[in-house]
Image (cartoon, rainbow over all chains, first blue to last red):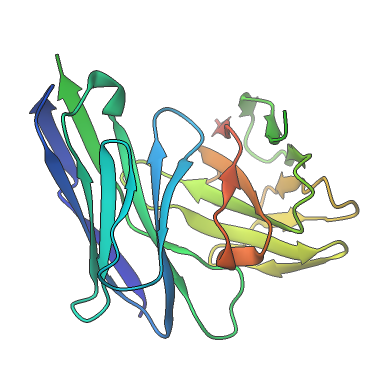
Length: 113
Length: 113
């Protein structure tokens, strides 16, 4: 059965800390891995990763994929209270299904001032 | 501004009543999706549609129905057959199915008593 596992499920840090969120997966015919940030309602897209070892970066956020070990990490440096959110990892399997992204349960990050 | 609009934000219904959640997008996306989010759970796919007048069941379609008569609109009906309908419902769209990132609406929180 295809699955995506995120860890930790929740995390509390202080402003300025660096955090690493983990996402491991087991899927048939991997196509891509995506990270989303969900603050209150709508998840917003952060990164899409398809190739191993190529870091994607946006400001203080970065992410990398390891297709051999089947995981991805999301790094946030110099955290701010505005980074508090649930971070969702999702994997798009290959094959016939065009509809089903497989989501992890998310990591709830709380950044304290 | 282009985006996805879900309405209403909050919906309260008595058990046994059908209820329809609205989802409209002006992004000119072909693919649209409905997800259900429960506390501590990942997003689970209810239905998706790649083109007008066509839609496919997701993992948890039982007790739900959809229509796709227009490209912009993908309403979801929660029927009385859905055993546990209280949840947060998210609508999403994308340009190229799961080959491209999903754009999400702000969600509808449905409470059935």
